[in-house]
Length: 294
Image 1 (cartoon, rainbow, N blue to C red):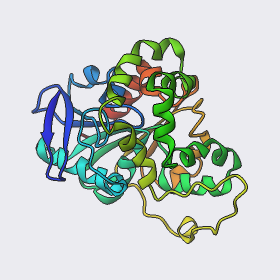
Image 2 (cartoon, rainbow, N blue to C red; image 1 turned 180 degrees about the vertical axis):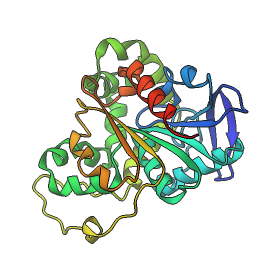
Image 3 (tube, rainbow, N blue to C red; image 1 turned 120 degrees about the vertical axis):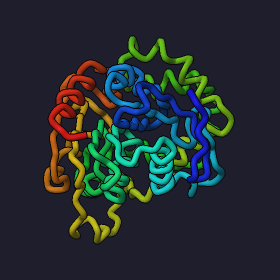
């Protein structure tokens, strides 16, 4: 790990692998993780890429700026571009999961000239996600946890129960116990860094995504039914079909929003497919990138 000060105003811990002269491949993680989301993929792609995997702002030992606004998606996009600039990567392949995927979708919309190829792993397109929260009762139900994460009293309740119990009773219940048990100490070490719990949750609080309550009928945002700009970089979407939080409805209509789309469904995987089924993820990315110009 190296410490990288960014022109965006934060310093991030960053894992790198491979020859710095090779094409750049940047890996973005999501909640509640770190660069270790990609621990199985980095060695594989370091064979022919320069792999860059940051701990994003607010996570693990990276900087944790004060205030909810510091975790708005545009701040994380600025971090991404500054990180690429730091390493001299004018264009790069971007691989992203969960909140990292939210950053990646936005980066592809705002900076398509920087992204040679886009790989999204279980992270919904912003238009499809927001539409589904209004139109799909199952997805709205599955996303009620976001309302809980936005509750300013949540940290106090987690601290009262302790991080270890929080791990056992919430996060770990959504994944294979045999896979996650050996990683518990690493997660607790990251989560216990001062300010980390609030900073991670602030990603949810800073998001403009509306999550209506199940009995709520809010006004429908006009942009949900207006034209939406396309994603222009070639895009591979890998989806663990057993994801309990982000349902397969997130794939519906995606082809109309992405100019060059490939979808790889992994039927036996859940949300954390990069380490639940790492071999399948590596194979899918390797096969697709072989067909795409760097």
